[in-house]
View 1 (cartoon, rainbow, N blue to C red):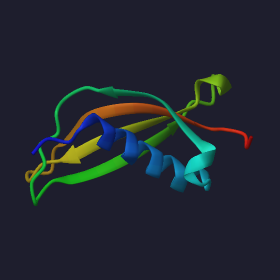
View 2: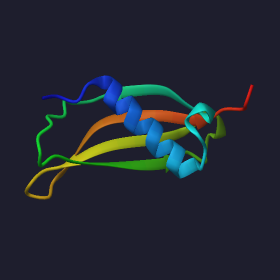
View 3: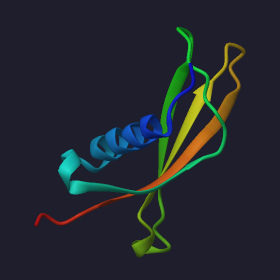
Length: 88
């Protein structure tokens, strides 16, 4: 099986909610760029990394989604930009 693009968006949203301490309805995933396929099996390990872009406050927060192979090598699969949104 291969991770669908919507799966990367869901991972980015969950990571942003946890890091920003906000519920999902207060977080926007503005862009998801899939760089390479992620094959899923029972051994696939996925992790996320959030990078705050302090030099450009309007740029949002960058989320990188990586997997780790059995030999310990990390591979980036997707990058997303997320930001907090104000309640309507």
